[in-house]
Every structure is written in C-alpha cells, then in structure tokens.
Amino acid sequence: MLLENKVVLITGASRGIGRATAIEAARQGADVAINTFRDAEAAADVVAEIERLGRRAVAVDGDVALPDSAADFIDRSVQALGRVDVFVSNAGICPFHAFLDMPVETLRRTMEVNLHGAYFMTQAAANQMVKQGDGGAIVAISSISALVGGEMQTHYTPTKAGVHSLMQSCAVALGQYGIRCNSVLPGTIATDINKDDLSDPAKRTYMEGRIPLGRLGRPEDIASVVAFLASDMAGYMSGAALLVDGGAFANFQ
Image 1 (cartoon, rainbow, N blue to C red):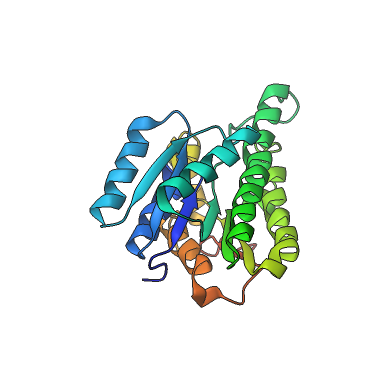
Image 2 (spheres, rainbow, N blue to C red):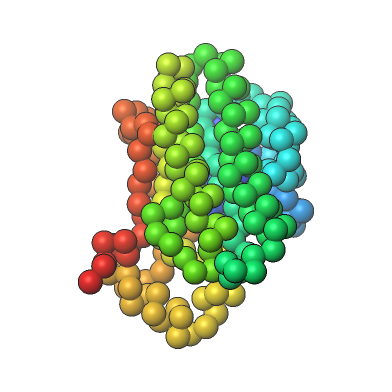
C-alpha cells in the first residue's frame, strides 16, 4: 500500500497509461481524481473500477491545452477528495505526420496538449500543494522520444523532451516546499496512441525485436513505476528521470 490514504490526480486518465496509473494508485490505497476529455463512458469505467477497489474517485472533463482547465481540475478534485498529495501529468497526443509538410495546426495542438498542458496542470497542482504546506510528489510522463528522434514525430519528440526538462526545473523551484518532481520515460507501450502505427505486423515484429526483453510494454509497466516515484519509498528522488523501455535504448548494436 505505497499510497495509502493519499489523494492522487492524473491527467489523460481514461485510457492507456493514465487509466492503468489511476487503477494502480487505487490498488496502492489512494483516492483518485482523473482528468479526461470528451470520453465520458471510458471515464465512468475508470471511476467504477477504482470504487470497486474500495477507494473514492472523481472524473473531471477538461482540455488540458486550455489554462482554465488546470484550475478547474484541481479545484473540483479538492472539493471532492479534500487535497492533493500526488499529481501525475500524463495527458498527451501523437498524431504521426511527416516533417516537411507538417500542418501548423497539428504542430500547435501537439505542443499545447503535451507541453503547455503539462505546464498549466503542474503549476496548478503545485500551488495547491504549497497552500497545503506539507509537500507532495509530481510525476510527469515523458517518453524515450525525449532522448531519440522519430521520422514521423518531429512535433512530438520536442514536447516530451520539454516535459522532462520541466520536471528538472520544477524540482529546483519546488524543493523548498518539500515537493518532489520526477519524470518517467516509457519506451514503446501498446496503447491507443500508437495502435494504428503498430497494426502493421512487420512493424510490430521489428519493434519487439529491438527490445531485449522481447515484448512491447504494457500500461501497467509504467503505472507501477509512477506509484513508486509518488510514494515515500522515493522520498529522496527529485529531478530524476526513469527510463522504462525493456532495454530498448541500450540496444544500439
């Protein structure tokens, strides 16, 4: 029970890594608030799963790209659950597209959701933690893409590098308040965000072959690491980045 009686807030939590993290937080004893966007049925399913685990849950709809959504998510979560102990910035998109003819709107939307959204949400959560006066933990989902390039991801990889950098700077800015900030860098995780890309059997086989552990990651593989970073077991970790990729980054040869 790493997160017993804590309140955990997670953005982009109706599916994939966010959903798995919300459920893992509940398994570890936390009450959970989830942010979703126009995904009411999936959000209700996550809330029901958390409640089946005996914990309280609330879902708040909002577009993380809009600054006002951050204050709304934090305020409504605190109204329902009382406080914020852990904040997980997870919401993100990756509409694959070539570089030379990248639509301006695709670039703008990816930046606004992945990086601006992480900034606004982290700032709002941090202000609530400072107001409470007893510290907290912030974990952002970056990506292995913060470290490597991608032909169809020139708009995406800079946002994930930015999320990692944001956590480093926030670790410095917020340490004086007892707030720890760390990032997780998932490798290739089988989720909705890359479902179409991995639907090609040859591409999937190639990706699996590049991973020393021999399989793609599961959302649960990331959720357990987030729970650790959010817990008191990681009490002296701040400004760190944990690569969770089955060994893919190390497999250069």
